[in-house]
Image (cartoon, rainbow, N blue to C red; front, top):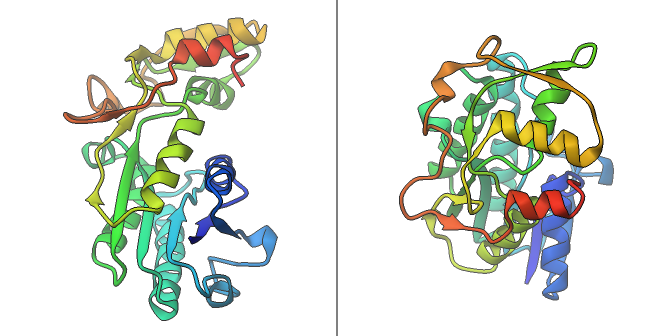
Amino acid sequence: MRIAVAGATGRIGALTVAALERQGHDVVRISRSLGVDLTTGDGLDEALAGVESVVDTTNVAAGDRSETVAYLGGLTRNLLAAEQRTGVRHHVLLSIVGIHRVDDNAHYAGKREQERLVEGGPVPWTIVPATQFHDFAAMVTGWTERGGVATVAPLLVQPIAPRDVADILAEVAVGEPQGHHADIAGPATEDLVDMARRTNEARGRRVRLVPTWSGSSTSMSGNVLLPGDGARIAPTSFDDWLAAGAR
């Protein structure tokens, strides 16, 4: 099949491209750095010529809520319109588990807007909600660390390996549209503070961790970020990831 990956130079996008190419598919990489601009639509029709399926792995660093919603919504509108013009038969969107249970998060609001547009759009679709990735705790401490001290919210998560996410997206892309796919998650529930501690140990970093909800939303506490019933469980555990070097 000829399949396009939007956000192809990002981590999940690049892994999805690799997974599809290992299967022998003809993959079109969509990224501004490669000459296709999703914010304006420039180059999209040409890139999607002959494409049967599109995997959208686009993302953005969360900022202002309205700006995040407008940005991700604009990308999605341009992509769906070009898909309709060029005859794409399947739009696959990577989303996040729990976004409909958390209202005060700008990034989640942007992802909800993407889902809304895809659900009401002109192209048959599959939305794949994933839990946080194995390096999520390291990302959080990178955001908050000051002078060797980092604050971490005591979240419960069921982290998944990016490579497993990419493999599932590649599988979904070559199949028929499913609507809402089951949540995808790793095999075990983890505490984010403990994940951060173990990641730092594996990487040889010394950071004092302060568990606190300060600066974080308590609406994400409890089971909110955990997968729902009937979730698809990917094989790679957090322990596997640590043993492989936490990279």
